Amino acid sequence: MGKEYSDYLKFIDDALELAKKIPKYFSKFSNKIYCNHQKLAIYVLMQKFKTTTRGIVSILKASSEIRLHLGLHRVPVHTTIVRFARRVKKLINRLLGIRQADTVAVDATGFELEQKSYYYRTVWNSNRRQKTKHFMKLSTAVDVDKQLILTYKIRKSRANDTRDFKPLISSLKCEKVLADKGYDSRSNREFVFKKGAKPYIPFRKNSGKNGYYQKKAEKIFNQKIYNKRPAIENIFFCIKQKYGSFLRNRTYTTQKVELISKLIAHNVDKMQHYFLFILEGCTSACLAKQHYIFTSFPTSGSITFLCALNSQFIAPSELFIFRNSLC
Image (tube, rainbow, N blue to C red):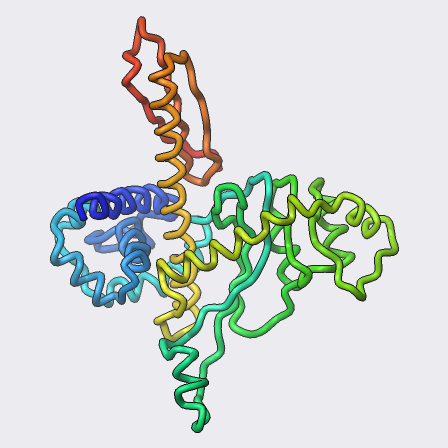
């Protein structure tokens, strides 16, 4: 329990660091009781706990250590968080600012807008017609190797997957793009090639293979590389299991903010795991008495690890972590 609690505190620290991408206050006339960085960290933490605004307020009241990490002198009322979610809609996009990866996968999934289970609606009450709300469709491009969300597109109605393919990868720098047959299109492959990347998109049975880019794509297609694509399905599963597969808010604007905050929470969690992996590598290098290790993580609020292990100046056990921004 102690380790799990410390993980929550680290999560808060990273969320506060990431929140610096948005202005501290919406207006210079703000009462400045709570800053936007604190409110955003609370909102993302709410997704981590899979709770409501009232639930996160209760958690804050019960834990003085969480309040200390957030820098809160008093606990906000739940309506403060609700109003913040409505106002931050135009700024929250800045927090998913990773635009570089070696291998990118593209796919879409849906989030339910109510808590009724699929079994309850279709099987248990099969003798009565159940009224159901439409789902929210999320299309994303992810870094397959680090399992981070890069870009996203949210729609409140059904739409063809191909429609969002180009907007998702247009701002990305990558070497390979993976997608399933739902994205099989001449224009999609041509777009990827012109970006300087290679498309690994399988052809449908009735798909034409005439044309320069179609033939080129067929020639370079590698099943071994394409087999990495299910990593994006794993990311969808993790997000829904850890942060919930349904959206609690009622309006489209707040539903969109809630969904984006789930993606942010996922990225913060994954970055923590990646940094721990780097630290373990640095520790092993210390034991091996190597002189210098340098590695960087290209995120919007990236952390660059520099380990100088020259025993004449720095003890091998010392590790210096420098925070910078590469966006």
